[in-house]
Image (cartoon, rainbow over all chains, first blue to last red; front, side):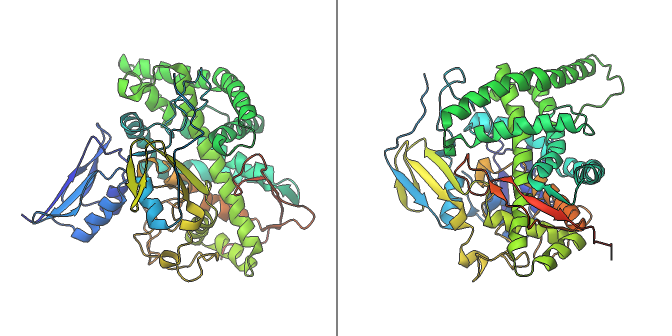
Length: 73
Length: 418
Protein backbone atom coordinates (compact mmCIF):
# COMPACT_ATOMS: atom_id res chain seq x y z
CA UNK A 1 0.00 0.00 0.00
CA UNK A 2 2.80 2.43 0.90
CA UNK A 3 2.21 6.10 1.62
CA UNK A 4 -1.13 7.60 0.65
CA UNK A 5 -1.99 11.29 0.80
CA UNK A 6 -5.32 12.97 0.22
CA UNK A 7 -6.40 16.62 0.28
CA UNK A 8 -10.00 17.36 1.25
CA UNK A 9 -10.98 19.95 -1.37
CA UNK A 10 -13.93 21.18 0.72
CA UNK A 11 -11.58 22.09 3.56
CA UNK A 12 -8.59 23.34 1.55
CA UNK A 13 -8.34 27.16 1.27
CA UNK A 14 -5.47 27.19 -1.21
CA UNK A 15 -2.90 28.72 1.13
CA UNK A 16 -0.17 26.94 -0.83
CA UNK A 17 1.77 26.18 2.35
CA UNK A 18 2.04 22.47 1.48
CA UNK A 19 3.36 23.32 -1.99
CA UNK A 20 6.04 25.62 -0.61
CA UNK A 21 7.10 22.96 1.86
CA UNK A 22 6.92 19.89 -0.40
CA UNK A 23 6.73 21.12 -4.00
CA UNK A 24 7.14 17.63 -5.40
CA UNK A 25 4.12 16.25 -3.58
CA UNK A 26 1.48 18.92 -4.15
CA UNK A 27 0.48 21.46 -6.76
CA UNK A 28 -2.18 24.13 -7.04
CA UNK A 29 -5.34 23.50 -9.03
CA UNK A 30 -5.75 27.09 -10.19
CA UNK A 31 -9.29 26.61 -11.44
CA UNK A 32 -10.58 25.49 -8.06
CA UNK A 33 -8.07 27.35 -5.88
CA UNK A 34 -7.17 24.22 -3.94
CA UNK A 35 -4.11 22.06 -3.53
CA UNK A 36 -4.01 18.61 -5.11
CA UNK A 37 -1.67 15.67 -4.68
CA UNK A 38 1.00 15.40 -7.36
CA UNK A 39 3.38 12.65 -6.30
CA UNK A 40 3.47 11.62 -2.67
CA UNK A 41 5.36 8.37 -3.21
CA UNK A 42 8.66 10.06 -3.97
CA UNK A 43 8.62 12.18 -0.83
CA UNK A 44 9.86 11.40 2.66
CA UNK A 45 6.77 10.59 4.80
CA UNK A 46 8.08 12.85 7.59
CA UNK A 47 7.91 15.84 5.24
CA UNK A 48 4.36 14.93 4.26
CA UNK A 49 3.35 14.81 7.92
CA UNK A 50 5.02 18.20 8.44
CA UNK A 51 3.01 19.61 5.55
CA UNK A 52 -0.18 18.05 6.91
CA UNK A 53 0.50 19.38 10.40
CA UNK A 54 1.01 22.87 9.01
CA UNK A 55 -2.06 22.84 6.77
CA UNK A 56 -4.23 25.72 8.05
CA UNK A 57 -7.49 23.80 7.72
CA UNK A 58 -6.06 20.33 8.42
CA UNK A 59 -7.21 19.22 4.99
CA UNK A 60 -4.36 16.74 4.41
CA UNK A 61 -4.51 13.10 5.47
CA UNK A 62 -1.38 10.94 5.40
CA UNK A 63 -1.37 7.16 5.81
CA UNK A 64 1.37 4.55 5.47
CA UNK A 65 0.40 0.91 4.94
CA UNK A 66 -3.04 1.77 6.31
CA UNK A 67 -1.72 3.43 9.47
CA UNK A 68 -2.88 7.04 9.86
CA UNK A 69 0.18 9.26 10.25
CA UNK A 70 -1.86 12.47 10.18
CA UNK A 71 -5.64 12.73 10.09
CA UNK A 72 -7.58 15.52 8.40
CA UNK A 73 -10.36 17.42 10.19
CA UNK B 1 -31.53 39.59 14.92
CA UNK B 2 -27.91 38.95 15.90
CA UNK B 3 -26.17 39.87 19.11
CA UNK B 4 -22.85 41.19 20.40
CA UNK B 5 -21.51 38.74 22.94
CA UNK B 6 -19.96 40.41 25.93
CA UNK B 7 -20.81 37.84 28.61
CA UNK B 8 -19.59 34.29 28.51
CA UNK B 9 -20.54 31.13 30.42
CA UNK B 10 -16.84 30.36 30.90
CA UNK B 11 -13.44 31.89 30.16
CA UNK B 12 -10.40 29.77 29.44
CA UNK B 13 -6.91 31.26 29.13
CA UNK B 14 -4.24 29.29 27.30
CA UNK B 15 -0.62 30.39 27.42
CA UNK B 16 1.44 27.44 26.20
CA UNK B 17 2.52 27.38 22.56
CA UNK B 18 1.12 23.93 21.71
CA UNK B 19 -2.16 24.60 23.53
CA UNK B 20 -2.64 27.88 21.69
CA UNK B 21 -1.78 26.24 18.41
CA UNK B 22 -4.31 23.48 19.06
CA UNK B 23 -6.96 26.10 19.83
CA UNK B 24 -6.19 28.01 16.61
CA UNK B 25 -6.72 24.84 14.59
CA UNK B 26 -9.97 23.94 16.38
CA UNK B 27 -12.86 24.49 13.91
CA UNK B 28 -15.30 24.94 16.82
CA UNK B 29 -13.54 28.11 17.94
CA UNK B 30 -14.66 31.17 16.01
CA UNK B 31 -13.51 34.78 15.72
CA UNK B 32 -17.13 35.91 15.54
CA UNK B 33 -18.32 37.69 18.67
CA UNK B 34 -20.79 39.95 16.95
CA UNK B 35 -23.49 38.23 14.87
CA UNK B 36 -25.41 41.45 14.27
CA UNK B 37 -25.80 42.86 10.77
CA UNK B 38 -24.02 46.03 9.72
CA UNK B 39 -27.29 47.95 10.09
CA UNK B 40 -27.59 46.62 13.64
CA UNK B 41 -24.15 47.97 14.55
CA UNK B 42 -21.61 45.31 13.56
CA UNK B 43 -18.96 47.35 11.73
CA UNK B 44 -17.11 44.18 10.67
CA UNK B 45 -20.14 42.31 9.35
CA UNK B 46 -19.16 39.84 6.65
CA UNK B 47 -15.41 40.52 6.51
CA UNK B 48 -13.19 37.51 5.91
CA UNK B 49 -11.25 37.91 9.14
CA UNK B 50 -14.28 37.21 11.31
CA UNK B 51 -16.30 34.94 9.01
CA UNK B 52 -16.44 31.27 9.87
CA UNK B 53 -16.81 27.89 8.21
CA UNK B 54 -17.83 27.49 4.57
CA UNK B 55 -18.10 31.18 3.67
CA UNK B 56 -14.67 31.83 5.18
CA UNK B 57 -13.08 28.99 3.23
CA UNK B 58 -14.73 30.07 -0.03
CA UNK B 59 -13.53 33.64 0.42
CA UNK B 60 -10.00 32.58 1.30
CA UNK B 61 -9.79 30.28 -1.74
CA UNK B 62 -10.42 33.28 -3.97
CA UNK B 63 -8.35 35.81 -2.05
CA UNK B 64 -5.37 33.51 -1.51
CA UNK B 65 -4.72 33.64 -5.26
CA UNK B 66 -3.26 37.11 -4.60
CA UNK B 67 -0.66 35.65 -2.24
CA UNK B 68 0.89 33.09 -4.60
CA UNK B 69 4.71 33.09 -4.79
CA UNK B 70 4.81 34.60 -8.30
CA UNK B 71 2.63 37.52 -7.19
CA UNK B 72 4.71 38.00 -4.02
CA UNK B 73 7.92 38.10 -6.05
CA UNK B 74 6.40 40.55 -8.52
CA UNK B 75 5.57 42.94 -5.68
CA UNK B 76 8.79 42.46 -3.71
CA UNK B 77 11.25 42.60 -6.57
CA UNK B 78 9.68 44.63 -9.33
CA UNK B 79 7.21 47.02 -7.78
CA UNK B 80 8.37 47.80 -4.27
CA UNK B 81 12.10 48.66 -4.39
CA UNK B 82 11.76 51.64 -6.70
CA UNK B 83 8.77 53.03 -4.82
CA UNK B 84 10.48 52.49 -1.48
CA UNK B 85 13.63 54.27 -2.55
CA UNK B 86 11.78 57.23 -3.98
CA UNK B 87 9.49 57.57 -0.97
CA UNK B 88 12.29 57.33 1.56
CA UNK B 89 14.28 60.00 -0.25
CA UNK B 90 11.24 62.24 -0.24
CA UNK B 91 10.07 61.54 3.32
CA UNK B 92 13.42 61.68 5.08
CA UNK B 93 13.61 65.40 4.57
CA UNK B 94 15.20 66.34 7.90
CA UNK B 95 17.81 64.80 10.18
CA UNK B 96 15.06 63.95 12.67
CA UNK B 97 11.66 62.58 11.65
CA UNK B 98 8.70 60.67 13.08
CA UNK B 99 9.18 57.15 11.68
CA UNK B 100 5.70 55.75 12.32
CA UNK B 101 3.81 57.85 9.74
CA UNK B 102 6.68 57.23 7.30
CA UNK B 103 6.36 53.48 7.86
CA UNK B 104 2.64 53.73 7.19
CA UNK B 105 3.20 55.65 3.95
CA UNK B 106 5.72 53.05 2.76
CA UNK B 107 3.39 50.18 3.54
CA UNK B 108 0.18 51.70 2.22
CA UNK B 109 1.51 51.84 -1.35
CA UNK B 110 1.59 48.10 -1.79
CA UNK B 111 -1.33 47.45 0.53
CA UNK B 112 -3.45 49.66 -1.73
CA UNK B 113 -2.29 47.84 -4.83
CA UNK B 114 -3.00 44.48 -3.30
CA UNK B 115 -6.39 45.52 -1.97
CA UNK B 116 -7.32 46.98 -5.36
CA UNK B 117 -7.37 50.70 -4.61
CA UNK B 118 -6.04 52.83 -7.45
CA UNK B 119 -3.70 55.44 -6.03
CA UNK B 120 -1.00 57.64 -7.51
CA UNK B 121 1.94 56.36 -5.51
CA UNK B 122 3.89 59.56 -6.23
CA UNK B 123 1.19 61.71 -4.68
CA UNK B 124 1.87 62.02 -0.95
CA UNK B 125 -1.49 63.72 -0.42
CA UNK B 126 -3.32 60.66 -1.73
CA UNK B 127 -1.16 58.29 0.28
CA UNK B 128 -1.76 60.30 3.46
CA UNK B 129 -5.50 60.18 2.83
CA UNK B 130 -5.35 56.39 2.60
CA UNK B 131 -3.25 56.22 5.77
CA UNK B 132 -5.98 58.20 7.53
CA UNK B 133 -8.49 55.50 6.56
CA UNK B 134 -6.06 52.80 7.66
CA UNK B 135 -5.85 54.43 11.07
CA UNK B 136 -9.63 54.47 11.42
CA UNK B 137 -10.08 50.91 10.14
CA UNK B 138 -7.30 49.72 12.46
CA UNK B 139 -9.27 51.02 15.41
CA UNK B 140 -12.27 49.12 14.01
CA UNK B 141 -10.34 45.87 13.60
CA UNK B 142 -9.24 46.10 17.25
CA UNK B 143 -12.66 47.14 18.55
CA UNK B 144 -12.67 44.31 21.09
CA UNK B 145 -9.65 46.00 22.72
CA UNK B 146 -10.89 49.58 22.25
CA UNK B 147 -11.15 51.82 25.27
CA UNK B 148 -14.27 53.48 23.78
CA UNK B 149 -15.96 51.02 21.36
CA UNK B 150 -18.97 53.25 20.62
CA UNK B 151 -16.74 56.15 19.53
CA UNK B 152 -14.79 53.74 17.31
CA UNK B 153 -18.00 52.41 15.80
CA UNK B 154 -19.21 55.89 14.84
CA UNK B 155 -15.83 56.84 13.40
CA UNK B 156 -15.57 53.70 11.28
CA UNK B 157 -19.12 53.92 9.87
CA UNK B 158 -18.46 57.48 8.72
CA UNK B 159 -15.13 56.50 7.20
CA UNK B 160 -16.62 53.58 5.23
CA UNK B 161 -18.98 55.98 3.44
CA UNK B 162 -16.24 58.34 2.33
CA UNK B 163 -13.83 55.51 1.54
CA UNK B 164 -16.41 53.89 -0.72
CA UNK B 165 -17.28 57.12 -2.53
CA UNK B 166 -13.73 58.42 -3.04
CA UNK B 167 -11.71 55.25 -3.43
CA UNK B 168 -13.58 51.99 -3.85
CA UNK B 169 -16.14 53.17 -6.40
CA UNK B 170 -13.64 54.59 -8.93
CA UNK B 171 -11.38 51.56 -8.51
CA UNK B 172 -14.34 49.20 -8.87
CA UNK B 173 -15.65 50.94 -11.99
CA UNK B 174 -12.28 50.64 -13.73
CA UNK B 175 -12.08 46.93 -12.92
CA UNK B 176 -15.69 46.24 -13.89
CA UNK B 177 -15.05 47.86 -17.26
CA UNK B 178 -11.96 45.69 -17.77
CA UNK B 179 -13.84 42.55 -16.75
CA UNK B 180 -16.73 43.41 -19.07
CA UNK B 181 -14.34 43.93 -21.98
CA UNK B 182 -12.67 40.62 -21.26
CA UNK B 183 -16.04 38.82 -21.13
CA UNK B 184 -16.90 40.34 -24.51
CA UNK B 185 -13.62 39.09 -25.95
CA UNK B 186 -12.14 42.57 -26.17
CA UNK B 187 -9.43 42.89 -23.56
CA UNK B 188 -8.20 46.09 -25.15
CA UNK B 189 -4.63 45.10 -24.33
CA UNK B 190 -4.95 46.19 -20.70
CA UNK B 191 -4.13 43.45 -18.24
CA UNK B 192 -6.40 42.77 -15.28
CA UNK B 193 -4.80 44.03 -12.05
CA UNK B 194 -3.57 41.45 -9.55
CA UNK B 195 -5.59 42.44 -6.51
CA UNK B 196 -8.30 41.48 -4.07
CA UNK B 197 -10.99 43.77 -5.48
CA UNK B 198 -10.53 42.35 -8.98
CA UNK B 199 -10.87 38.72 -7.91
CA UNK B 200 -13.86 39.51 -5.72
CA UNK B 201 -15.61 41.27 -8.61
CA UNK B 202 -14.70 38.39 -10.91
CA UNK B 203 -16.25 35.81 -8.59
CA UNK B 204 -18.87 37.93 -6.89
CA UNK B 205 -21.81 36.00 -8.34
CA UNK B 206 -20.73 32.88 -6.43
CA UNK B 207 -23.31 32.66 -3.61
CA UNK B 208 -20.79 30.94 -1.33
CA UNK B 209 -18.84 34.20 -1.08
CA UNK B 210 -21.85 36.12 0.33
CA UNK B 211 -20.77 39.33 -1.39
CA UNK B 212 -24.09 40.48 -2.83
CA UNK B 213 -24.18 43.41 -0.42
CA UNK B 214 -22.10 46.35 -1.74
CA UNK B 215 -21.05 47.28 1.78
CA UNK B 216 -19.41 43.90 2.30
CA UNK B 217 -17.25 44.42 -0.77
CA UNK B 218 -16.13 47.79 0.60
CA UNK B 219 -15.39 46.34 4.04
CA UNK B 220 -13.45 43.43 2.56
CA UNK B 221 -11.22 45.76 0.53
CA UNK B 222 -10.81 48.01 3.58
CA UNK B 223 -9.73 44.98 5.62
CA UNK B 224 -6.88 44.20 3.23
CA UNK B 225 -5.82 47.84 2.96
CA UNK B 226 -5.72 48.13 6.74
CA UNK B 227 -4.11 44.77 7.43
CA UNK B 228 -1.44 45.26 4.81
CA UNK B 229 -0.46 48.68 6.08
CA UNK B 230 -0.85 48.77 9.80
CA UNK B 231 0.85 45.52 10.81
CA UNK B 232 3.83 46.17 8.56
CA UNK B 233 4.28 49.71 9.85
CA UNK B 234 3.99 48.64 13.49
CA UNK B 235 6.42 45.76 12.97
CA UNK B 236 9.04 48.00 11.37
CA UNK B 237 8.87 50.41 14.29
CA UNK B 238 8.87 47.59 16.85
CA UNK B 239 11.95 46.04 15.21
CA UNK B 240 13.87 49.31 15.52
CA UNK B 241 12.59 49.94 19.04
CA UNK B 242 13.90 46.55 20.15
CA UNK B 243 17.21 46.95 18.34
CA UNK B 244 17.82 50.46 19.70
CA UNK B 245 17.43 49.11 23.25
CA UNK B 246 19.76 46.16 22.60
CA UNK B 247 23.37 46.25 23.91
CA UNK B 248 24.61 45.41 20.41
CA UNK B 249 22.36 48.00 18.78
CA UNK B 250 24.73 49.40 16.18
CA UNK B 251 25.89 45.92 15.17
CA UNK B 252 22.28 44.79 14.66
CA UNK B 253 21.47 47.85 12.53
CA UNK B 254 24.62 47.29 10.47
CA UNK B 255 23.83 43.60 9.94
CA UNK B 256 20.31 44.47 8.78
CA UNK B 257 21.81 46.97 6.33
CA UNK B 258 24.28 44.40 4.98
CA UNK B 259 22.22 41.24 4.93
CA UNK B 260 18.57 41.02 3.85
CA UNK B 261 18.22 37.51 5.29
CA UNK B 262 19.35 38.78 8.69
CA UNK B 263 16.91 41.65 8.35
CA UNK B 264 14.18 39.07 7.70
CA UNK B 265 15.16 37.07 10.80
CA UNK B 266 15.13 40.32 12.80
CA UNK B 267 11.58 40.93 11.62
CA UNK B 268 10.55 37.39 12.60
CA UNK B 269 12.14 37.79 16.03
CA UNK B 270 10.34 41.11 16.47
CA UNK B 271 7.01 39.53 15.59
CA UNK B 272 7.67 36.72 18.07
CA UNK B 273 8.40 39.12 20.92
CA UNK B 274 5.79 41.70 20.00
CA UNK B 275 2.80 40.08 18.33
CA UNK B 276 0.41 42.53 16.69
CA UNK B 277 -2.39 40.88 18.67
CA UNK B 278 -0.80 39.87 21.97
CA UNK B 279 -3.98 38.22 23.28
CA UNK B 280 -6.06 36.42 20.67
CA UNK B 281 -9.75 35.81 21.39
CA UNK B 282 -11.95 32.99 20.22
CA UNK B 283 -15.55 31.96 20.97
CA UNK B 284 -16.74 28.36 21.09
CA UNK B 285 -19.55 27.81 18.59
CA UNK B 286 -20.17 24.35 20.06
CA UNK B 287 -19.13 22.44 23.15
CA UNK B 288 -15.51 21.52 22.53
CA UNK B 289 -12.22 20.51 24.16
CA UNK B 290 -8.80 22.13 23.82
CA UNK B 291 -5.69 20.72 25.45
CA UNK B 292 -7.89 18.53 27.61
CA UNK B 293 -9.97 21.45 28.84
CA UNK B 294 -13.72 21.44 28.23
CA UNK B 295 -15.09 24.67 26.79
CA UNK B 296 -18.87 25.14 26.67
CA UNK B 297 -20.68 26.67 23.72
CA UNK B 298 -20.26 30.48 23.75
CA UNK B 299 -17.29 30.14 26.09
CA UNK B 300 -14.51 32.70 25.67
CA UNK B 301 -11.02 31.43 24.95
CA UNK B 302 -8.11 33.83 25.42
CA UNK B 303 -4.87 32.80 23.74
CA UNK B 304 -1.88 34.51 25.25
CA UNK B 305 0.39 34.63 22.21
CA UNK B 306 2.92 36.78 24.07
CA UNK B 307 3.48 33.97 26.56
CA UNK B 308 3.26 31.15 24.02
CA UNK B 309 5.88 32.82 21.83
CA UNK B 310 8.33 32.68 24.75
CA UNK B 311 8.09 28.97 25.45
CA UNK B 312 11.67 27.96 26.39
CA UNK B 313 11.13 24.40 25.14
CA UNK B 314 10.70 25.76 21.62
CA UNK B 315 12.67 29.00 21.61
CA UNK B 316 15.59 28.11 23.85
CA UNK B 317 16.76 29.09 27.33
CA UNK B 318 16.58 32.87 26.73
CA UNK B 319 13.21 33.28 25.01
CA UNK B 320 12.75 36.89 26.23
CA UNK B 321 15.88 38.05 24.46
CA UNK B 322 16.01 39.47 20.95
CA UNK B 323 18.23 37.06 19.06
CA UNK B 324 17.63 36.82 15.31
CA UNK B 325 20.29 34.09 15.15
CA UNK B 326 18.53 31.75 17.60
CA UNK B 327 18.25 28.13 16.52
CA UNK B 328 14.66 26.90 16.21
CA UNK B 329 13.32 23.56 15.08
CA UNK B 330 12.12 23.93 11.46
CA UNK B 331 8.65 22.68 12.43
CA UNK B 332 8.20 25.83 14.55
CA UNK B 333 7.76 29.23 12.92
CA UNK B 334 10.41 31.77 13.90
CA UNK B 335 7.60 34.31 14.45
CA UNK B 336 5.82 31.95 16.83
CA UNK B 337 2.05 32.37 16.71
CA UNK B 338 2.11 36.01 15.72
CA UNK B 339 0.52 35.40 12.33
CA UNK B 340 -2.02 33.12 13.98
CA UNK B 341 -2.41 29.56 12.75
CA UNK B 342 -5.19 27.41 11.41
CA UNK B 343 -7.86 28.59 9.00
CA UNK B 344 -7.51 32.24 10.05
CA UNK B 345 -3.74 32.49 9.81
CA UNK B 346 -2.83 35.86 8.39
CA UNK B 347 -3.12 35.72 4.57
CA UNK B 348 -0.48 38.43 4.32
CA UNK B 349 2.16 36.70 6.41
CA UNK B 350 4.28 35.97 3.34
CA UNK B 351 3.85 39.56 2.15
CA UNK B 352 5.05 41.09 5.37
CA UNK B 353 7.22 38.29 6.73
CA UNK B 354 8.28 36.42 3.60
CA UNK B 355 8.85 32.69 3.37
CA UNK B 356 10.20 30.71 6.34
CA UNK B 357 13.98 30.91 6.68
CA UNK B 358 15.54 27.42 6.54
CA UNK B 359 17.74 26.45 9.52
CA UNK B 360 20.90 26.47 7.39
CA UNK B 361 20.06 29.90 6.02
CA UNK B 362 20.47 28.64 2.47
CA UNK B 363 17.85 30.38 0.36
CA UNK B 364 17.56 30.29 -3.39
CA UNK B 365 16.37 32.73 -6.02
CA UNK B 366 12.78 31.79 -5.26
CA UNK B 367 12.96 33.08 -1.70
CA UNK B 368 10.67 35.89 -0.61
CA UNK B 369 12.09 38.03 2.22
CA UNK B 370 8.95 40.01 3.02
CA UNK B 371 8.33 43.70 2.64
CA UNK B 372 9.10 44.62 6.23
CA UNK B 373 12.58 43.11 5.93
CA UNK B 374 13.14 45.15 2.77
CA UNK B 375 11.90 48.31 4.51
CA UNK B 376 14.03 47.59 7.58
CA UNK B 377 17.12 47.11 5.47
CA UNK B 378 16.56 50.37 3.62
CA UNK B 379 16.08 52.47 6.76
CA UNK B 380 19.12 50.80 8.33
CA UNK B 381 21.14 51.64 5.23
CA UNK B 382 20.22 55.27 5.76
CA UNK B 383 21.76 55.10 9.23
CA UNK B 384 18.64 55.10 11.39
CA UNK B 385 19.07 55.67 15.13
CA UNK B 386 16.99 56.85 18.08
CA UNK B 387 16.38 60.57 18.37
CA UNK B 388 17.62 61.63 21.81
CA UNK B 389 15.55 64.81 21.56
CA UNK B 390 12.25 62.97 21.08
CA UNK B 391 10.14 60.51 23.04
CA UNK B 392 8.33 57.62 21.33
CA UNK B 393 4.58 57.49 22.06
CA UNK B 394 2.43 54.40 22.13
CA UNK B 395 -1.09 54.32 20.70
CA UNK B 396 -3.16 54.70 23.86
CA UNK B 397 -6.48 54.19 22.11
CA UNK B 398 -6.03 50.43 22.36
CA UNK B 399 -5.05 47.93 25.01
CA UNK B 400 -2.61 46.40 22.50
CA UNK B 401 0.71 47.58 23.83
CA UNK B 402 2.59 46.68 20.64
CA UNK B 403 1.14 49.66 18.76
CA UNK B 404 2.90 52.97 18.28
CA UNK B 405 1.58 56.42 17.43
CA UNK B 406 4.88 58.34 17.10
CA UNK B 407 8.48 57.23 16.92
CA UNK B 408 11.14 59.94 16.46
CA UNK B 409 14.37 58.80 14.83
CA UNK B 410 17.48 60.36 13.35
CA UNK B 411 19.21 59.41 10.11
CA UNK B 412 22.89 59.46 9.36
CA UNK B 413 23.70 58.20 5.91
CA UNK B 414 26.69 56.09 6.80
CA UNK B 415 26.09 52.84 4.97
CA UNK B 416 28.25 51.88 1.99
CA UNK B 417 27.77 48.58 0.17
CA UNK B 418 30.57 46.16 1.08
